[in-house]
Length: 612
Image (cartoon, rainbow, N blue to C red):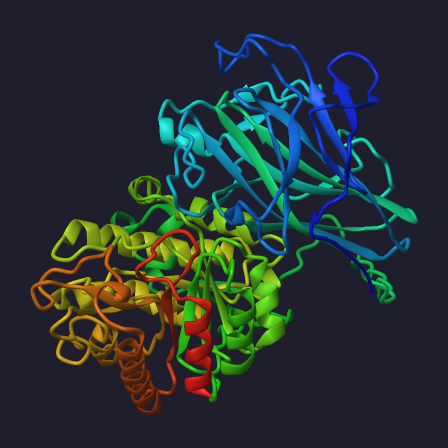
C-alpha cells in the first residue's frame, strides 16, 4: 500500500493557476498567496456582476488569498503545529488546491482531508459562523441549493430561501476530487468528485476514491462561497492519499439471461386471492398491501410448474456480543483527545459509538474495535427537523443520511431518525412521529441501505408512560428491521443530591419501563441510548437544565461513581433480557461547545484505566 500524508507543516511558494471565464488557463505567482509545497493553488476568475442571486455583488468570482496557520490559533489546527488557510475577504470564490500522486493503473486510490470553514457575515468572533453559531456543523450539500446550469464551469443558480440562517448555512462548500487520468484541470469531466459538504467551525473529514487510469493521478480540493461575507475562510489540515497495491479481483462474467419467447407466459398457474377487503375498505394503492397484508402471503399459486421465488429472509437481530462495555461516547469531534479516544475504543471496546457528522471516523473505530456498533446522526436544527416532520418526508431524511455516509457505509451499523421530536401528552404529535418513524424504516429498505434504523430518539422523560402503547406499530416495524430505540438516558444531579437511582424509572431507566409495554405485546426491541449522562436540576428532578452538564454539579470522581452504577444497572438488565441494550453514548466529545459536558483527555484515560 502506497501512503502519502501532509500536515501542512511549513514550506510555501506562490505557485497558482487561474481559470478565467473566457480564455485559456495560465500559471502565475501571486504576492498575496502562500501555497504549501507540493501543491498548486487554483482558482476561477470572472468579473461577472451583478450575479443572479446577489445583485449587490460587484466583483464576481474573485482570486483568493492564502497563508499558513500557526500555533497561535490552536482551534484552527487539527494535528501538528500548523494548517493551511485560504480566503476571499468580503468576496466570493471558487478555488482550491491540486497535487499529483503516484499510482498503479487499475488499482484503487483514495484521498481524504480534514476541512472546515469560518463563514461570518460581519462578526469577527472566530468561533462562530453565521447560520450555525458556535456549534460544529457538518451537512451534505443538496443539488437544489446551487448549480451550473449552462455548463460553463461557474455556478449560475443559487436557491435563495429568504431565511437568513438557511441561506447562510449553504454559503461555504467543500469537495475533494481525483482525476484518475492524471489531468490537471479541476473543470474536466474526468474528475471524480466527492459529495459537497458544508463544514463549519470544527474539522471534519471528506474523502473520495477512484480507480487509477495512469501512473500519476491528480487530487483536487475545492472550496466555494456564494455570499459576500466578511469572512469566507477555508481551513485545511491532515491530508492523506493511499494507493491500494492489492491486486484487484477479476470481474466474473455475467451469465446470459435465457431468451424470452414473445407471447409465451412464464407462469402457468391459477391465482386465488384470499380475504380480499371490500371495495369501500380499499386503502390507497401505496398503503393497500402493507395495511391489509402486513406480514403474510397475498396469494397462493396452485398447480404451478414454476418454482416460486423464496421469501426474503427476515433481518437478523444484531447478535449480542458479550464483553463489549455499555459506556461509549457521543462524538462531535476528537480534536485534542484523539490519542485517548482511540485508546479507549481499542481497549474498552464500547458497545456503541455515536457520530454526529464526521462519518469517516467510523473507519477508524471499526479498525480499533470491529465489534463496536457505530451509530450515525445527521445534525439538523430544530426548525429543519420540524420541516421534515411536518411535511412527512422520511424518504428525504433517509436520502440525506445516505449522502452523508457515502463512502463510509460499510463502517456504519445504525442511522438515526429525527432527534428529540417526540413530546409527552400530545396525541397528535405521537401519531405524527409514529407515522414518520414507520416511513423512515421503510425508506431505508427502499434505498437499499444496510444500516439499521434508530427511532424514537426521545429526550429524557419522554413520552409519558400512558403513551407507550401508542408506539407499538412503529416498534413492531422496528423489530422486523432489526433496529433500535434511541432513548436519551440522562439523570439529574445538583450539589446536594443525585437522582440516578431515585428517578431511574422516569429518567435514565425509562427505556426499561417502555420495554415492559412492548414485551407484553410480544415485542423485544433493541435499545441504543443515544445520549446519556448528568443534567443539572435545582428542584430535585422536576425541571432539568439542558445546558448544565456534570461539570456544573459534581467532581469527576463522583461522576465515575454514577457511571459505575449506571453500568451495573444496564448489565443486570442485559443478563435478564438477552443483551438487548447495546450501549449508551455519553454526551459528549466536542472541543468548543457544550463545555460543561465535555470529557478531557485525562478523564477519558482515567475512565479507560478504571474499566480495565
